[in-house]
Length: 168
Image 1 (cartoon, rainbow, N blue to C red):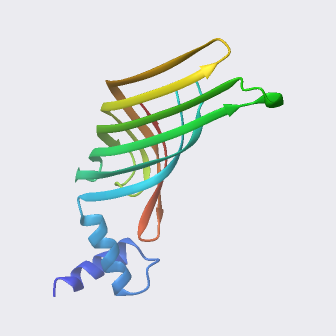
Image 2 (cartoon, helix red, strand yellow):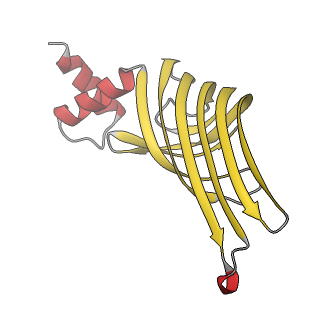
C-alpha cells in the first residue's frame, strides 16, 4: 500500500519514467540519505610530474537535499622511467593514499543534480622515490591537510555521474 503513493509521487516528479517500478526505484533512491560511490580519476602530484589514473570510493550522507557529509578514500600510484638514447636519466615512483571527511553543499535540487562545493580535512600518506641526474631522494610522510571538492552532478537514469575536482 505504501508503494502506490510513492509511485504516484514519482510519476509526477519524474514524468519520463513510464512504469511504476522504475518510478518507485527512483523515489526510494532519492529518499535514501546514504549514497555510496566509486570511480576512476585522473590524478597528479603537486608539480604535475606524475600523472595517471587513480581510484576513489566513498559514501555521502545527506541529512537534507542540499547538505552532505562525505567520507572517501583515494589511491594514486604512478611511475616514470625516462631513458633517452638508452641512458637512464630519471626514474621514479610516486604513491599516495588519502582518506578525507568533507561537508558538502549542493546548489541544485538535491544530491543527484547540480553544482556542489565541499571542504574538510584529509589524512594523506605520501611516498616519492626519485633518481635523476641532479640527485636522488626517498620521501615518505603522513600529513593532515585541508581538502576541497567542487564539481557538477548529472542524473544518469537511476544513478548519477559527477565531474569533480578534488584538492588536498
